[in-house]
Length: 458
Image (tube, rainbow, N blue to C red; front, side, top):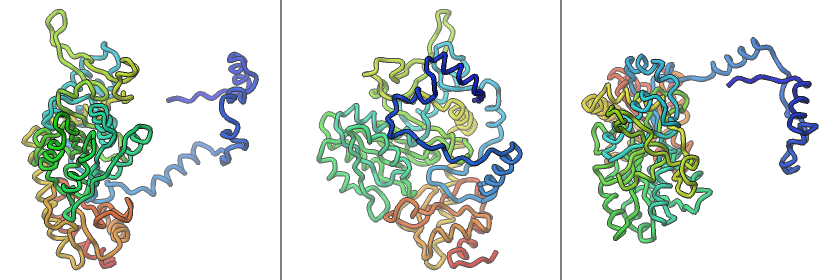
C-alpha cells in the first residue's frame, strides 16, 4: 500500500473540508486518559541508504533453514516442494488470487478453489470442505464455535496434546464468549487420558478437540476416544473435532474414518514453504449436517443457462452477506494463493505420492529415534507409544544449551519444550521429514551426542 504524505497547508485544507480547526478536534471521542500527552520518542530521521544498512544488519542476525539442516517441527515442517509448483503457481492467473466476493469472479479462481475443496474433503475423509481459512489455529477455533452453536452447551474439552499455539488461539476466541475450555490431561504414555475424558463427559459438553498425531508426536487412539464421546449423549452427543497433520494421512486413518464430525489442519505441509510463520493455510472439513454452520465460503459446480459447466460462490456465512444473527463467523478471507499452491502439490503427488512421502517420514524418524536413544542419558519420553515423524526426548542436559551448540555447527535440532511452560513432558521435540538423507540423519545423531555432553568437536 502506497503512502502519500501531506504538507502543513494540505493538512489545513483537509481539516477545513472536514469541518474542524485542528487535528486534535478529531480525537474528542477518545477519553482524555487514553491520549498521549507527550510526543512519541522517535529517533531523528536518517537517509534511505542508512535505513537499508540498518535493516540489512538486523536481517543478518537471522538464521534460517537455508543455513541450518532442520530437525524441527511442532506444526511447521521442512518438506520437499517440487519445482513444478513454483512454475505453475507463478502464472498470472494465480498471482492476484484473493477472496472470491462477487459471483462474477473469474471462473479460473473458482475452479481452483473447488478442486481444492474436493481434495481436502477426500484427504480428510469428510463430506464437504470450505475454501480454506487463515491457518490451522484459526481452523480449530472456528470448529470450536461450530460445536458450541450446534450443541448449545458451553463446555469444550481439549486434549492436552493440542499444539500450545492453537490452544492460545482457542483461549482468545473463547474469552469474549460463554465458552469454558477444559483440558483433558495426557496419560503417562503421552496420549489423551481416556478415564479423564469419560469423567469430564458427565457434564453437558459441546465438543471435544483432539490432535492426531498430538503435539508430542504420539499417535492417539482416535477411534477409541471418539467412541467414548459418542457414547456420552443419547440424541446429540458432543462433536468430535480432529486437528490433524495432513502428511500423516498418507499412512494413518483420516478423521472421517475414526468418526470425527469436523476435521481441521494446518496445510503448510502440503507444498507451502517455511516462511517465518506464514502465510500458511487452514483446512476445514465436516460432515454434511454441519454444512451450513461452516465458516468462510464454499464454491460449488453447476450448469449455466446454456448448459455449460460453471463454478459459483455457493455459500458465504459471514455477517456482511447474510442476516447477522445467522452468521457463523466473521472469517471472510480464504488463503487463495496458498490454497492454489497446495492444490497443485496434492495433484502432483496423488494418493500414491502422499503415501510414499509419509512412509519416508515415518521410517526416517524411527531410525533417528533409535540412534538418539543410544546416547547415554538420552531417552524417548514415551518409549512405548507409536509416533509418525516426530518424537519427544528427555535429556540429561539443558535443551536450550544443546540446541545452541547444534546451531553453532549448522543443525536446527528441534524445539525446546520448556518455552511452553515448566510442566511440559520431555525436553525436546524432534521431527524428521523425507528431505533428510540417511547421511544427514547419521551425522546429526553423532553431533547430537557431542552437544549433549557440551562438546564442541566436529
